[in-house]
Image (cartoon, rainbow, N blue to C red):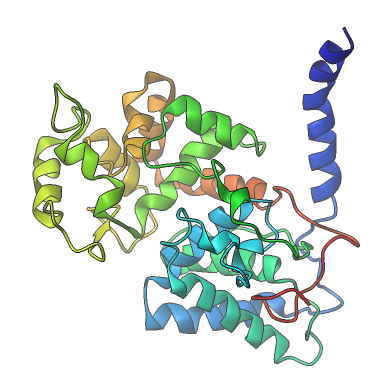
Length: 326
């Protein structure tokens, strides 16, 4: 009876804990301590973006991988002293260096202003930089809540089973996102981040060569697209070869990702399942037909993602160097 009461209360307690943590986040958090933080970050991000487009998908992916493990506390940025930091986990080894470099450069730009030095967290800089790369790539500008503090702990085991995989089905995706207070619509909107960026052949090779005893190629995959992928990813492919996740407009943050799903051109099984499963298809169809609806839903979902597991008040610290605790 006692355990039943605990199970019954836990969702309410979880929601109260989440509400308390992010209640301290606000868009004007640095109004008095670093009023021009947004322009400082944006100018640094813009310079980096002009050097290489990879800045955009790399920074966006870095934020997801940070927030889904220990919350949005910039723990993914911490360098390893023993080979056992988050960034050393196999799921994080493919995080592009340009994402890390973007945050380091934006942090340096902020700290070069005497009023702002050591006042702005790496977690907040990552959140702002992510919004800016999305916007620079053609996505909608959305407001970013601020006031996160940086975590001091980064462990390899904490990544295990906490990031969605390329083979996840709808139930697995919904469960993982719900754990962080994100709905199915949020999950589908956030999956739209795959409208920019790239992947490596080993992440989807099973879908085009060895899907099942009955079907060599995943039947939910457009056959012509599967053959194109086979050409780009031969069996003994160089592991460094990168494939665009959106074959239509890979350098524009738009809703082409969802139109690709309608045509069976989702690169990962976890992408294509959003259309092939009837429970999520209507949302894919909405976003495919209405870019503004997708962009708005993405901004809302990013705001919710940015509240996950945040450290505020006296918790954590403001890191002087984003790669190591003070």
